[in-house]
Image: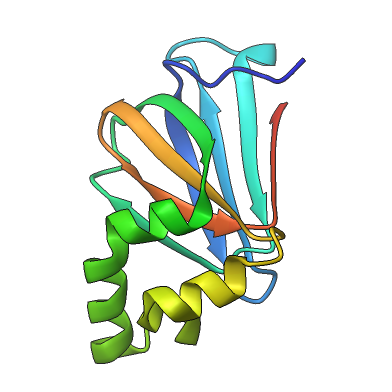
Length: 131
């Protein structure tokens, strides 16, 4: 059974560029023990976050079509790539993104919250476990 993060608050958010991971440690407020969770994205190809992590109340992490998710964020991703290098050449155009996602190894994940941080992650693997 997958650990639920619904209504959890973000305690820590770590992006490890060298390891290509994103780790979020979460918990229900004012509780301890098994109410902690770790959300770990591995094989990260790109991400975009919006909102504040201070006081974020999580709703869900949802697996979605990677190219569809890219299309939602395409303007932002293409602008970031053009001005700062962005997430990599795959973010420069829909055709480049489709080429990366064609083999199905990179998946799209929509991050949603009731309050605070939301966004998208493109990664090869997601695990959510009790901490």
